Amino acid sequence: MRALHLLLRLFGWLLTPLLAWAASFLGATAGTVLSARVASPMAAVLVTAGCGAVAGFTALLLWLQLLRRSPEVREALAVSSEGVPDTVEALIEEAEGAPTPRSGSGPA
Image (cartoon, rainbow, N blue to C red; front, side, top):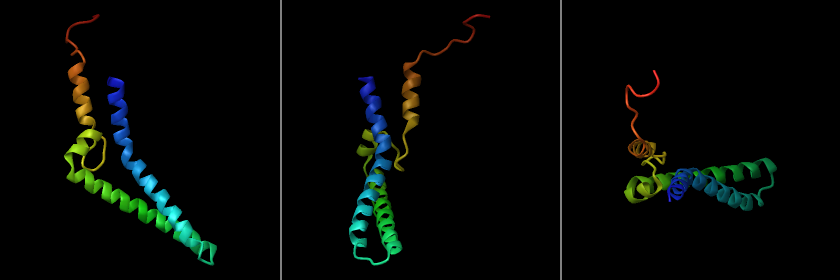
C-alpha cells in the first residue's frame, strides 16, 4: 500500500510538466496543419513553434489556476498551489514513522 501511495504521489508531481508537454505537442501538431498553407519553410516552422508555445503556456496557466482554486485536487496530487511537490508533509510523515535517535546511546 505504501508503494502505491508513493507511486500516486510521484504521478501527481509529474502531472504538471506532463500536461504542459502534451498541450504543446498538440498545439505544435495543429500548427503543422496550419503551416501547410504557408509558402515559406521558415515561416511554417515559426507557425508550428508559436502554436506549440501558445498551447503549452495556456494549458499551464489553466492548470495552475485549477490548482489554486481546488484544495481537493492539490491534496490528492500532493502539490502546492504553484504545482510544486508538497515535500514538507512527506518529511513530517517520515519523521513521525521513523524511530527517534537517543542521545547518549551507541558506541563511545
